[in-house]
Length: 443
Ligand code: ADP
Image (cartoon, rainbow, N blue to C red; front, side, top):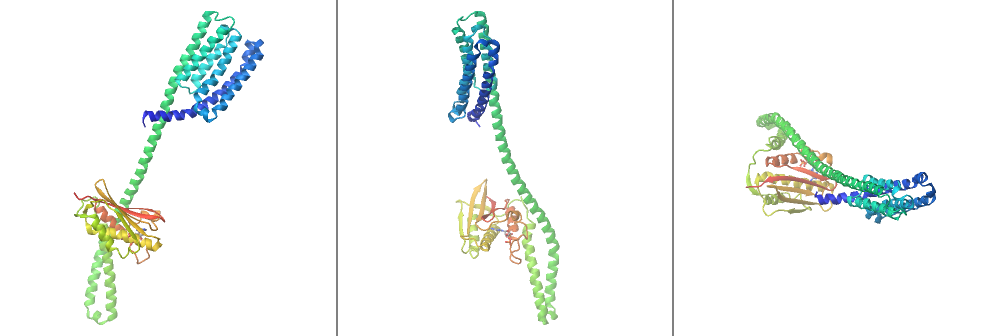
């Protein structure tokens, strides 16, 4: 934030501050002016009545200014209205001095008091304070001049004048530093607010990073588990397959139709397990962060192929895309086509199941920081927040038993990780789901 901007902000906040103080000060002035009847009683009892009338009139005038201070115009002219109501008691005191003892009157102390109070209690600017001090002094000079005795004795007049001018100077200096302190306070407040906003942004980023790291850790743990499981399952499955093959060659098996049928069923079951095992291998033995292997290929072509290969599932779905001119990336083209097929068919399936009207899939592709970022977004039913972090887990599926294995996204996750990128999901339940990943640029 520039100093000018800060200063403008400070001025606008100061207006409220000044208004509040001005009103508070005016109420105090009314009370003090009225309580001054006690002074009149002690010092000038013979003038009690006209002075009391003057005090009531001045109090009412101050109250009038307070009313204006509450209006919109009052807000704009607050400093000058404050100066006006401050001068009212000064004029009254000057008139009292001229009506009584002139230079000898102790009422000049009242003028001094107002000058000090204006510097200490009111958030005045330096210039307003100086004007007020000088005007107060001029009123005192006029009061002495209009007194029948004139400026006599001169010595006392000089002493009182100096006291008044000293008070004005001290009050101005005080105001100056007060103003600076207020400005510094405001700047500090603005800086703290700015820092707080920065911290909030950092916090949000950290929460994001924490989420990503948790996801990666979870996938790594599941990967280790899957690898262990594969090791244990692979050998028995192979033995079984071999044993079934041998059994099928036995004469008894060849003679008995039902036995052959049983063996064929068992063989198919084992082969299914073998397929799942080989799918899981991609996930279990993935190497995140390893050097990307593969050849350069045009991502656009891979996208075309995957759309063609899923044409059957994408019937009735509006497929749109947004691509940069050059999409040359490095990696395993077949595996990336696999990922895209998985994303498209998942989206098509979710939309069909939910009966989405006007189903659409939009693919956005753009370059950022040397990598190609791809987002496949559909307007289907979306993914529930509690499922969002789980969709990449192997065997996580919301499809009916026997319809989906829940391996598609976990394998895709592993493929993208092998390309040094990350596959992640975002969604608004009932609105849309989007899967994004990134691939390295081919040098
Ligand atoms: P499968 O398709 O066999 O269920 P996946 O790993 O491909 O396995 O997907 C896991 C789950 O993620 C799906 O069962 C589904 O609940 C959810 N999912 C994936 N893509 C979408 C999508 N585009 N819209 C809604 N849900 C989705």
